[in-house]
Image (cartoon, rainbow, N blue to C red; front, side, top):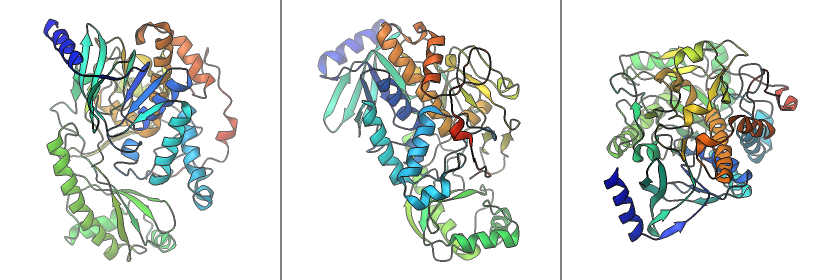
Length: 467
């Protein structure tokens, strides 16, 4: 530890300090956007840094075609900032898109370019500052506290000195750089495969819908995929189409197929995945044109900037959320969110099987504040898919609506801690819960958790199959 502190002092002495916010958020995906908005709205001077030139993470960089459910099948349980952003995207995407989606909260298609603009607008309106094209590549430590981040961008290398730090990288990059212990993947380090998502134009939704009605197939096209595999037009052992997200009647997004053996924390693996993923898309485009009515004349207009990543690191936190908590639908005294998404672990290789486990309709479990608190660090919090959990629960928590909820909690906690002058463990958790509820979050219906009035959003909800 002495050498680590000395190294930190040496680095900080050589590099200029570029920013001194109350709170710095690293990573501009769903959890980072919500964290930055929440921290700034609650009065903290906030800086959000992102490696790309836009916000959105897997929803924009990887082109995940639709938002996972916001509801438990009966009511919205992801509310607050997450629901606000969903509704803003629907309204901003145009009259036709809004008409198609206005009463839907589950599996809403993502209009990527609209969503990028919405994130820019809402983060800036909150008062948070954004710094694009920037990596945090080193953490400066003093005891159990982070004293600064070394960042790299076109302006050079410099140091950010903040009071509180939010790791919203999805891969626990900041926590790992800080020496926080973590687990990766399954028992033997196996990881869920990645998927290179993409968007096509020139489709005909009416013709496709008629094909589905005639064949009795859903958007996954199970029988058609199997037929193409038998004929050698699709590779064996690849995942069926998760679903088709229709942005317009002629533009559709696809989550289709797997790239195996990818570790999203390794540049070499991400490089291989990008190349293999783009190759696989071309095979799938030919399949769609040949086998699926409505897609005869499609044209590829956008593939993901990177492969979609489902899991990497999971931190060791003050509490580890485990599958028994999920199955028993457990609530915790320090709940900061609720989760109802099914456990969804994709096959690790072409010969293995998927794991899926649903909760009963209308039911959910709590997400405790403690699972975001990394062991050994007082002014660092982690939000998103890399919080402290076992692998099955990570397969449920990892989706964007849940990341919004965890991000809002992390940002609100950071603002509270910046006022108190302490770390994340020194805030009042009951005070955090009250603030979250006041700001639209839903923490369940139980004593001491007054429900925020969300009656308007529970009317006329449509539910659809996985997309």
